[in-house]
Amino acid sequence: MHISKICRVQTESVFLTAIVVALFAFTFAQAQEVVQVEPAKKRLIISPGSSQAGVINISNRSKDPKDVRVYLEDWLYLPVCDGTKDFKPAGSTNLSAAAWISFVPAEFTIPAFGKKTVNYVVKVPPEAKGGHYAVLFFENYLGGGNPAREGVSVNLAVRVASLFYIEPKGTISRQARIGGLKISRDQDKSYISFNFTNSGNVDITANANFFIIDEKGLPYTRGEFNAAYTFPGDSVLLSSSWKEVIPKGRYDLIVTVDIAKVLKEAGLGEVPAITKEAKIEIGDNGEVIRVGELR
Image: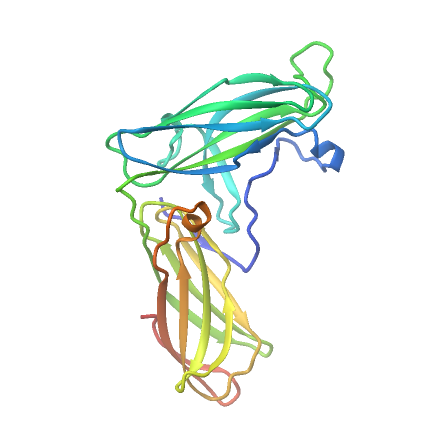
């Protein structure tokens, strides 16, 4: 799998809330009609040939009972680069973990203001290597009940996700390549970009920043790039900018890329950040007249 993406600076838009199957503007009261799921995502490190069990908690905050249907699908990152996900039939993607996951029950009713627990087991095949992914959907209907039942008129289906990130222990390679540095300036600001490629075998959410220092080590400007959400083989163009006019001279650009964000969030350890440097030269009017390679 190889997907080229062009990204702009933006905030993460992770699918951890309800996905509406039709275009619909939720009011607060309508949002209360959607069942709540905890956890919304789960990263599991399991030895090949082993299994791990867990639970997902579903709560109903409305005054009506909810009929809930549970099913698995696959997911991928969309090329918009803000963490938005695309969903595919279970088992249809190269990195699917859907066949590894079993769960009970598949259908149930939650009483008004009630709670329910779904039990799951993840069995990792002995030959498994690299990250695999799936999503467990919990689907219910606004207004309570199920439209297949006689007398229920509201048939807008909504579904809430619990995302699975599964890493077979001892097989994970979390690596990336960066290069293709470009810097330019117009009348208002300077622009910087570089290519980030996930060269490992697991998903990487990367955060990058830069700063520019002179030959004496004095800093002139710094900035942050948009986050990169990638699966193995994905290539992303990260970009940023600065407004300051840097005086004529030669400078060092230092780029640092943190590729262990998801591990730190899950309390699963750290991976050293990638740090690269490049020589740049600024002209009389703040224009960039030379850009070296990131090394």
